[in-house]
Length: 315
Image (cartoon, rainbow, N blue to C red):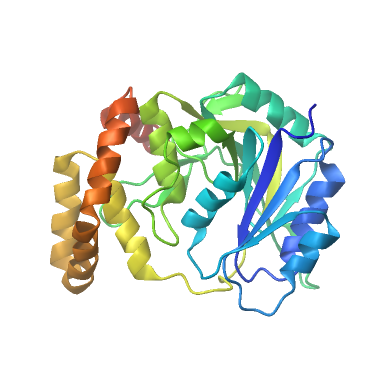
């Protein structure tokens, strides 16, 4: 394999030594010597992340101020100099030698796709060691919960829709390890329009399906994800709420959007008013995005909603 085909993009904030642990795991198991790009989103924990990058020959970028995980991902893709990339969180583990060669082959064979790993849930043991989470159930990607109460969150799908194949179509990627063709990502406008944190996987997954591509789970590509009891930073709720309204405005039909907006206005009027004002202020840019994606989408939203509902009913 050409060693200049894959870049691993790791946006992070206040991860401490977990960034180095993730890089070590990559270096110990990858066989094509992929590029590694560390995106420091304004960490303020005093940890020397630049030294980690130097130690392991990674490219290092530090945002001048915190912009959030969604913009940081787009920053990473823009800086990527290889045809393919893999997003990782800053607290991951790999187990299979040569997993990167398999991933590159699948990316080459599926150029209009988002490939998602099978997630191995990890936690901290009594001595602080990383161990598999007890009673963990195998999952197969995710689906979007469209109920008003759940506010467009993703939920794990526990049903294998294609037990006899290694690649299975899934409504949404989830699990902190997913890969794509750089040109395809930029064709879809990536995560443009999202603020800070939240709704990233929902946005890009729906875009892929509406464009005519596929979100695919690679069942035999397993990546460990260390689940924590709390974030090492504060995730601003107002920006996450804005991203929900943005997703509805950008991709969903008026009838569904109206149902959500009416409910939010009735139940959380102060927060809704503030965020809706910001949405209106950004509407010129949103309108331009809506026009652009209307020129590239081959499927309408009902196509995604039907597939998503089928998976939801099985869970």
